[in-house]
Length: 242
Image 1 (cartoon, rainbow, N blue to C red):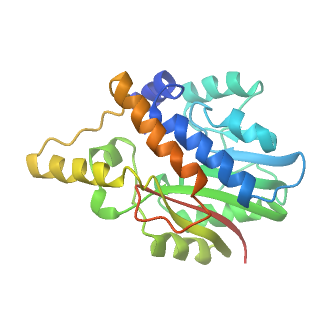
Image 2 (cartoon, rainbow, N blue to C red; image 1 turned 60 degrees about the horizontal axis):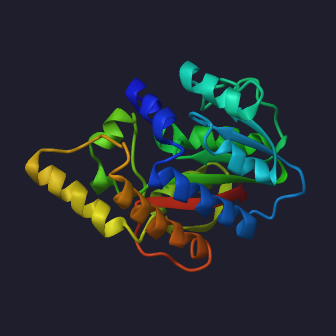
């Protein structure tokens, strides 16, 4: 990702509506669907500034990987121990058959060979282990945001399921989320394309709007994984060895 993306993440990951509500949605989803053992061994790959690590720590003992040095330093402070730097798709030095949960939260789209990356993660799962995956949805929504984040693709449910299955995994409860705000996001992307004024800035909106978006997005914590969601900005699934 561009350096400015990491800088904005460090500045806004505790206040931006998207980060705050998504953490709650993911925590509820894992509580319902994760079926993790007590004191699970957890690895987050591509943890960025570490803003998800306290949430994941509710479920077990957390390790993390981040390839950007500045973001890794911030994440290490939050985790209270060094964050590793083993890159995908190979994950050198990460032990095989070790983790009960691997979290890749908006990460797989950054990897050119996504199947190889997922296959490497599969090898690091302990028996009964799972991979929590979120990715951006809808290739037609490609924008300047994807460019500055160095994405290789956005996914459909079909293309994500195929990549998972090609890696020797099977997806569970694969579906959309960030659906309630999807019409607004889609409209903004279409308007930006028509006007030639696409915006890659992801700083929070004005405080009242930020609070409103957070409240709306957080409502999905009661639905994701329980009921089929309409098209959304993102896709979520738990994948496990086939």
